[in-house]
Amino acid sequence: MTQLLGDSIVSALGFTSEENYLNVKNGVSGLRFVADRYAMSEPFMASEIDVERLEEEFGTAIKEWGRMSSDGYSKLEKAAIVSVVKALKQCAISPASDRTLFVISTTKGNIECLSDGLDCFVPRNDGKGDRPDCFVPRFFFFACGKNDGVPDVPRNDGVHNVPRNDGKADVFCNDDRLYLWRSAEKISRFFGNRNNPLVVSNACISGASAIIAARRELKAGRYDTVIVTGVDVLSEFIISGFQSFKALSQEVCKPFDANRNGLNLGEGAATMILTESNSIEGVEVTSGAVRNDANHISGPSRTGEGAYLALQSAVKDVNINEIAFTNAHGTATQYNDEMESVALARAGLQEVPVNSLKGYFGHTLGAAGILESIISVYALKDGIIPATYGFETSGVTYPIKIVKTPQPTTKRRFVKMLSGFGGCNAALLFTYNPDSEVTSNRESPARYQP
Image 1 (cartoon, rainbow, N blue to C red):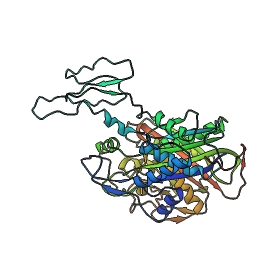
Image 2 (tube, one colour):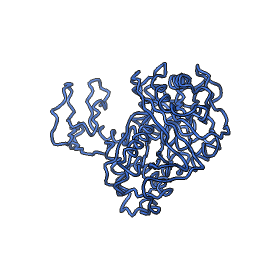
Image 3 (spheres, rainbow, N blue to C red):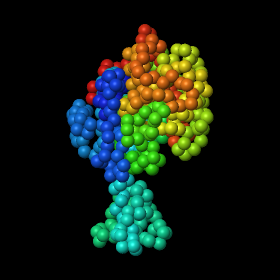
Image 4 (spheres, one colour):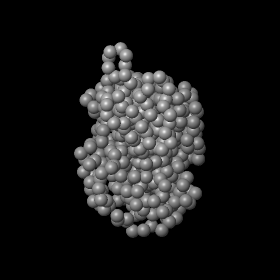
């Protein structure tokens, strides 16, 4: 059985899982109105990691792990590393072992580095000055600056030459910070791990996909321990993308509500440390499934086909009456929430309480599946079903049981749902066994010290 050994969350609501959970339990939202950053044309609601506290926590991690410098790490990488450091303090594993694998879930990585390619301007002929039409990402190895619509000859030396029109020297770029594998490598190498990290980037289901991938690696016996970390931070690129869909709300989002009018974005890093055991005292990743209905590049299936199939697979071997709640994706967009209600009803889960955590954290993208699973684990162990922040009156077709206020529960299972662009869907089933004894398949070392 796949056992949870340690966990941690870094978000606007705190820098440990416990701190984040207590804020959720007490009805505290990390969402704030953002109007003065990211050069956006419209303000929006979002949750952001406290940068000063992140720098302080990362500085502590640098000292604890004996690293020479904190230079060269992005905000995303720092948040992920801090999350892993705190999760490691809960368990006795060596992150540097060749029997330990890092799995990194992120949808965008250091996407903000794209703006560094905006060095070339195409002259206009209407007297209004230059315009940044020639947008050249660093990893596109070609030169630009011509007005004939024909790209210049690609270079073969791995260097991207951007001619400028301002009389300054050309810009030569060979930065690989944009690549997701590079961030994953920096995170794992910080802990002395020399294995090639596994990167999972599958839209909004990335976190769940990463947990499923980790579980497969453990069951195949290729590793003794897998450190699964999901992380994404906000950038102008991400925000403008969602604004182009008119999907962002200027209010705190209202999942499943009749008056919902869009989602909120959020920053987060969350880590689960998993191992394989003969029996479990604590939390088990019981099953998981990914299904793609290929409905549309951005719109979910009207019939909830992919989500239904994922749910059906995840819960097929358990009694539905044993499930305490379903933590839905619940983005507060019109189509997503409606689709989830259809899928839940089709899967026979319409009588199981449903909640969403987006009103506390916003949509944390590649971190969402891991972060929201951890909060749900803490709630299950606490005997509580968290409320859906922002929900008042149901606005979905199927009469699912949306949790408006916190509810007690004595049940020991929950389902986590996620859906994303391109028709991807995922479902996870977690089980809490408080009375059983743990017998690991692997020898457990003393608590690891860097």
